Image (cartoon, rainbow over all chains, first blue to last red; front, side, top):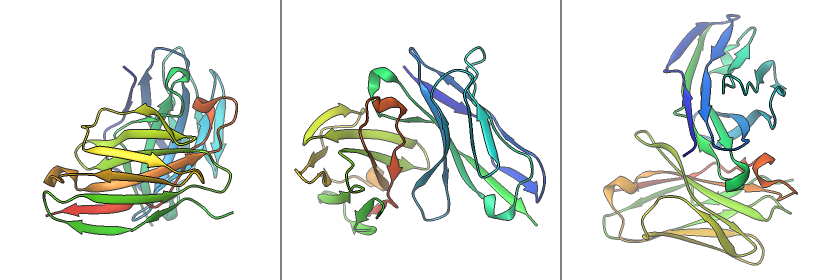
Length: 113
Length: 116
């Protein structure tokens, strides 16, 4: 079945550091890929998405490129802020399973001033 | 536009009881999905409703059920609660355009259920 694997966390960075959170996936068809963010006590918010190979999703300084050849969708940001501290989830949805999302384990990011 | 709303936000029940959670999607959204979030299992898909019909279901026992009303509002019910049902239950809605898998799902804040 479909699966998503994220880098093990938690991740702790200093403000203005470069961020990479790795995400790889297994899917039988042609999935759409998403990054969601969850702040403490809240639900999930879409951060960015890509629906076909080589697409780049971007939002609020975050970027991720859909790499079909490596089945990856790594999240990057050039300069993190304290306000970026949250849990980040990589997810996919398959065309054969409609809007059902399969999530990775989540990566806790803490940014220190 | 108002976001996805879920009620109640917090709930405490005891083993063996049943519980009903409610979700109101964003206005105009017709698809509603439910997810369970726990520290051990992460985020897991429960089921999806569209036009009052369940069209997708995750791997959960029959104690977990749901329904959708004509105004797209949805409820999920858990009967005979177990300690392991303690979790954050998230509802998500999407507009249902031409390609369901490409659409963004918009999540509510969740209902935190504690089973004692």
